[in-house]
Image 1 (cartoon, rainbow, N blue to C red):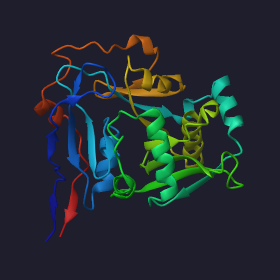
Image 2 (image 1 turned 180 degrees about the horizontal axis):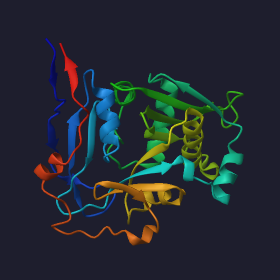
Image 3 (image 1 turned 180 degrees about the vertical axis):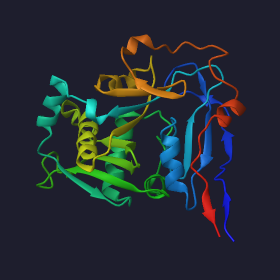
Image 4 (image 1 turned 90 degrees about the vertical axis):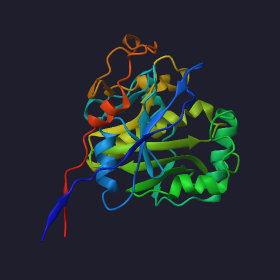
Length: 277
């Protein structure tokens, strides 16, 4: 006899903690576990609704009085590089791209530490050790890859062959850039921008329509770079739409800007039911 059971993950809310993007605000997240045979379908489905993956958890912001964080993705067919982005592509054309399984190495961790110490010394990952880094990379129940960008000669700059890395999920409609880091001493190379540009190229090669960038936050300087990519869409009020003018979006707080958790969960679309024997 065959039965059908709905995939019904349980959703939870984190305790409030200081917001990493907007000073003086508190953040909380709505999250669910990502596990089992339906993990990839759940990741695909919820990514289209503004969720992000961190190891075996899917989450999205659900702050009490703030809805500034907006999930962002690039529509590959609509993307055209700006003049400065075209220069970034040419400047970094010597790098060799290599895609590997999500397996952490000491070389990656050394680059990761240099990046954190230079860019995010006071951030939530500042104390991450090698074992925690390995967990971030390797604990994935979905189709993930590490995209490395290295010197084809092994040591072009300061005897360091590896210059940028991105942990990337392959979704059914695009690439999700889970986390990227790069050599902070190569500031003029704009490696962060280059990694995004190359992911757009990879998506085109694979015939995938989107590159998911995580959250764009109006009013947050550290997130401003995302709005400089053409073809950008944001997930706003339950729908994806073309961003338009970034100045049209506000980070102003309001006690009614976020719906109650129960209403948010009720509106989440889950994967279709699956047959169970």
